[in-house]
Every structure is written in structure tokens, then in C-alpha cells.
Image (cartoon, rainbow, N blue to C red):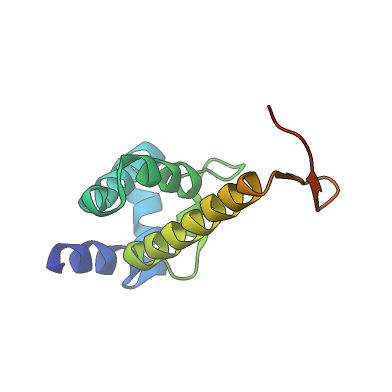
Length: 119
């Protein structure tokens, strides 16, 4: 747990100073590696698949190629963001399973469920 705090404080303490310094001292690729490394302590708790999805989302780069998505946030605490990500992922899976169990298919375009036959 103490290791997680160190990682989180590194990424949240004086965030704007860290970002400004990192942007001038480190390349985007170096910062991506650093972010990836910061997620490793959470793999055992959340699993590789969820961590990979989390990384792919938050490591997206802006159009100018200067910042990752997480760097643009006012605050970013990895442990809390991952807990929320996991909760939302579980809710999405439950929603999909429930709709499959009752034979309903969600049509995103129409924002409605339809009772349709599945094979």
C-alpha cells in the first residue's frame, strides 16, 4: 500500500510543476514508460486486461502530440481512478449480461432495448 502512495503522490503532488518540468525534460515516450511503470503495482489487484484498457485510455495523446490524456487532468490519483474504472467496468459487464439473460439487445443508435431472438 505504501508503494502505491508513493506512486500516486509522484503523479499528483504539484501536478502542474511536474507536468511543466516533465514536458521540458522528458520526451513523450519517456513519460509513457513512466506512466506504464506506475501502473505495474496494480496488476495483481485488477488484472492485466483491465490495466491495459486503463493505460490505453489514459495514455492517449492530444492532437499536438505533447500530452497524454491523464496529464491534462487537474488531479489524477491512479489508485482512485483505477477503483472507479473497475466499478464502471463491472457495471458495464453486468448490464450486458442482464440484457443477454433476458433476451434483449441494446441498440445504441436508438438508445433502446429490443427483444430479439438470438441463436
